Each structure stands twice: as C-alpha cells, then as structure tokens.
Length: 259
Length: 259
Image (cartoon, rainbow over all chains, first blue to last red):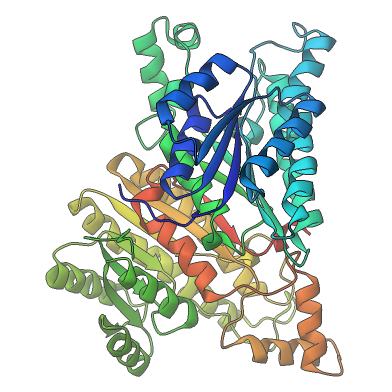
C-alpha cells in the first residue's frame, strides 16, 4: 500500500506505542511523514523499538506511566524540546483484566480507571495545553473499544473506563473545538485485534488456541480478526486535515463486530 | 496524487450536485474510473464533460434503470468496485412539521432517499460480488441522528438509510462487500442561502444573516462544512484504507450531533 504525506512535519505522541495498535499507529504516522514520540511503561521495549526504527531525527521513545501526572508533564516538556511543538496525540495506552465486580478489589478498580480513563483526561488536558502553546491547534484520537457499546459481566472496570473515554471525548471536543485554532478530538472503537489476543484468553473461550481463534473470527462478520494497520488507517484519516470538519465522533473499525 | 483508488470503478449518483461533483472530482484525482448519474440529464452531461468522466441520466427510483446503469459501468470499465448512493432530496421547504407534512410529499422523499438507496444497493451487490468485493457508501445525514421537526420526511428517510446500511453491511461482509454511511452536518452547498432565507421566514427573523448566525451557533466548530469534507470521508470509505470498516456511521458535522 502506498501512503500519502498527509502528516508531513506534524509532531505526534502515541501512548502505548510499542505494541499492537499503538505500534501500528507509529509505523503509519512515520510513513505519512510525521515526527513521532512513542511511550510505554516498559523501557526495554522502547529501546528495542528505537533501535529497530533507527531514524533518530523523526522518532523517539520515552518511558511513561499514563496514570502518573508527572510522567505526562515530563513527556510534554520532552516533546516540545525535541520537536518544538505538538500537533497530534493518540491516547492508546490501556490496561485490561478480566474480573467481575465481586472479584475486583476497590484498589484494582481505581487502578484500572487511572490507567484507562484518568490517563486520557490528563493526556487531553496537558496535551491540549502543549498544542495551544504555539496556537496551531491539533488533533487528538482516544482509543475506546467495542466494549463501550454493551455490557460485559467480566469486564466492568474496562467497560466503564471506555464508556468514560467516549464521554470525555465528546466533552473535550466541545471545549476545544470552537477555538480559533481548534483541536479536533475523536474516539475510535476497534474490534478485537489479532495480535493482542493472548493464548490464555483464546484457550479460555475455545478450549484451545485454534478453536478460540475460530470463535473470535466468527464474531466478526467480515470473516477475520482486525490487524493494527486497520485501526491505524482510521486514526491517520482522523488526525489528517482530510477530517477537518470531524470532531466529537466515535468511529468503529471492527469488521462489522457491532452489527 | 497518491492513486488511492487506482484500478477502481465507481458509480456516483446525484453526480451533478455539490457533494456528487466533489466526490467525483476527488475519486478521479485518486485514479478511479467514474460514472456519474443524475436525474438532471443536462447536469449529468455538463458535469461529466467538465470532470472528464462518464455521465448518464438516472432517476434512482426507477428499478429497471438501475440495472442499465450498473451494466453500463461494467461494460465501459470492466467491473464495479464502489457505489456512492448520493442522490437524494431535501423535500419541500413548506409544510414540513409532523402535523403538516402531506402524505404525498412524505412518500416522495422516502421514494428518492430510501427506495433509491435500497435499489442502488440491490443492483450493485451482484456486480460487486463479480468484482470480488467492494464498497457501498450511502449518504445519510445528521438529520438521521437528531430530531428534525422541520424536516419530518427527510429525517425519517435518512434514519432509514442508516439502518439499511447496517443490514447491507451484515449481509455482504463475508463476501468483502462493505457498506457504510456518511452523515454530513450543516454544509455550505448551493442550497444554503435558500435554507437560511426559509429558516428566517419560518422563525420570524429579521434577515437571512440572522438565520446564518443561528446555524453557526449550533456547530461546535463554529462554521459550516464543505463538500470537500464529505468527499474526503467518501474517499476513505471507498479506498482499501477502510478495508476493516463496515456497517458504521461516519459523522462529518463539526461536532453538531453532540449538542
């Protein structure tokens, strides 16, 4: 597939950028000409990615826990110092654990909200500050999930957080959309992504990895499980100027899963 | 440009209108072969000769005409990969409330917007199947998402298009036939001055400018969108970029459906 240069010269931060969808977004943004900073909790994975990508002039990694306010401050200061501005933020980092309400401790619930919801709040709050510093406006994409569209007995914290992300997205789009240099803010709802399905999860639903994969496939009308590149293509469209009139929306990229 | 539609053949109905012309122009610039149709024979011919594509007269409510148009695209270009069901009617500007709308007017709007879209999907599916899959793009509207007491028939028709889109998406998914809807918000089209004037009259405003200000105040981004905003959404949905996106609603409204 050939790519456009829609993001040429734009500076982007992608949280959770070393794996899965985040990694797909990093590759895609670089291919479209952006300058990219990826973050993740695991510094080792970040060093590997820096070595693999190699292009120090257009890519950097920074270790970050998205649930920590000081990590956000450190990251945004680094972005401005390294690339001079911020145009794009993809709040992709997330944590997930399968447990019912009865099984979930209050501390664990709070920790899930810190990683999945408060993190997005902080990303938008401090990210918008950075974007408005050179008053050029920008674009933010928050990763929701098809989980936000219905109930799940074993994913209460994750589902609540993702529903919260969609609510925050809409409020933030109103707050930042009317500025003279607006920041457009949208959410993307991916379906399941093949690379993110653990063997443990697949075995739990199918008895074996192969049967589990077959069950997951059958839940997506299009006949296959999603790839990071599928979601990255939607995100690249949404942050580009081709989506200049799109804000506050929820965009599914799910192979028809929600049908 | 980048040839994002190279090798693809597209039919665009309502091709002489604002959205139709913008979509056709962008598709051509991205390498597609394009057949536009319009109920206005003269408009279809002039637009086609200006853009350098094929143009034919078509009333989208005419069942047999659909088969001829699809057959023509396949004969001239060898296949059909994309159908944009863009033709539609806003309906009358007079007698538009649920209480006042004449039945004949209600039926006329459903015939063009709902039956026309249904007939297009039905006629295209076998052709898209012959091509090994493809993309159907239905023009719904923000009027299909919000209450429209001053566009009773139009709002109902566009909500029906959204639902029809999901059924077609679900039906065609396994064969690689994707179907999505675009929901434009308030856009600056040739009709807009008449809409301002009609609104000013209906609400007893002093001038059309007052109506224009009222419209803009309802849009979080503070201004109307353009036909190009719609054409870029159509390009994304027509291209392989959106290969994992089906059954979804792409809202292009400057955030209007949030408020």
